[in-house]
Image (cartoon, rainbow, N blue to C red; front, side):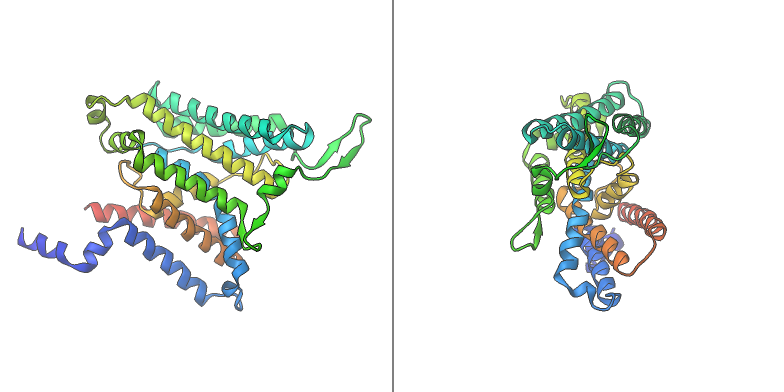
Length: 336
């Protein structure tokens, strides 16, 4: 007992045992990496940091929803495909059909929430492993996105009744989401991400449902015996994940000025990496949106640093996979 107490009193041990400290350390190491490999000073320009946050915002929105699912003890592999489905649908509604954003946006949010509800229902009600349930939704949503779009990008080139194509202006909602504020220093997509993070934090930290998610992730049977509606609560977590994927899909379509059925491939990997690097455990019951914010900044800056230094995408993917393994091993070491 004396040896254990002495070990726990070590400041380095206490620092390593804190998920926020580990996440901040990872972010600090990435920033140091950027200072060292600054691409002839590009890292020190304000535009680089603005673009890093803008590029990370879509991943961050996905990670907000993924945090809800992982805290409940689940996983969602379908968020990238749901993002693509919503991006295609939103582009069709806004560009080709000319629908008002007051109709298109709610319908797309409902579409994402419905995909999450189906995944959560299959996992929670029918007791199918979340990996399998969301894998099935990943394949289905991707196929539906290709079916809806005819296998092509839904761009601003719109076919007319006579068979010709005209290049139309981007809808106002696209321009709004893709714009910048505060003297062109902050992207609207980044603001949307921060709003999503705030809403998710309020749900986890201030709402009874958030406490129930932690309880289910920590010990599902104990939560059930305590009167928690486990199935309903878990389904709502996946609904939240699908809703966030829909928000990310709308932002993705606005940034790309089109709906691409192939977009979002591998985004679920990045979202999981963000959550795990932040310190939320894959086994559920521990974590939070503050940690996910740190993880978003870490991955966002890492991607930007690799980009400005012309590192190939294949190498970035391999590095992301290695980071996930390292983060999980760090969590296991802390629990041990």
